[in-house]
Image (cartoon, rainbow, N blue to C red; front, side, top):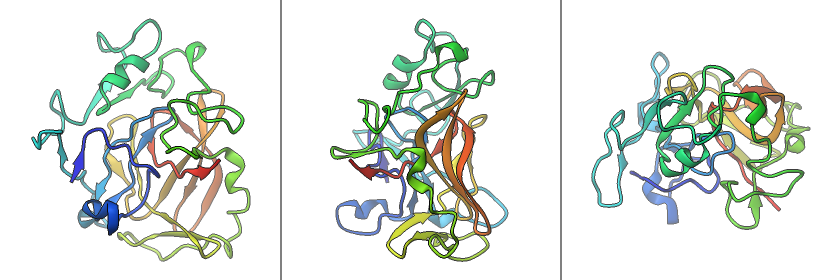
Length: 238
């Protein structure tokens, strides 16, 4: 079960007990780069080789099921839709509508459809977190250099090949990165759940942002992606 308003402290993982016991088989909240609220992840039991996983059911505060695609459920919203932009940005709309997956086909951002108005410090700058950083107190979204040594296979080995709920990579035998997949920014669909991992950094380049992207057979520690994609955020301690 996923309740609207829960942003996922670490944005990624399969919670299986304790405080997060009710989130069993949830694989990774997807955050559009710079947004404070995460989107619900995949139901691990729906992962298959040939089809995309499905989103876990979403419930409102009163227990009502929020139907996907409805006005109150998880939905795709074109940034050019009337009422989305306030001035030149969609920040206010995104905060008021945390389940709206906003996209711009123009520059691949949710925040604006004009590169001149992009905000490169939404998640902070030079190691200092902002109010929109999705991580809890004492933690922040990582900078691009966080994964500088992950390129060594011996340090960041993959679990297995194929597609399954247990796939991922382990850093230095102590930190698990699930292959939680992503949300495509053009249609908000889940993709590659159980076979690939996508993790945002706070670092940007031109109109895009940098990220850790890995398959079971290869990885990129500074991959450049459009900011409207829904990736996980793996918080680091301040």
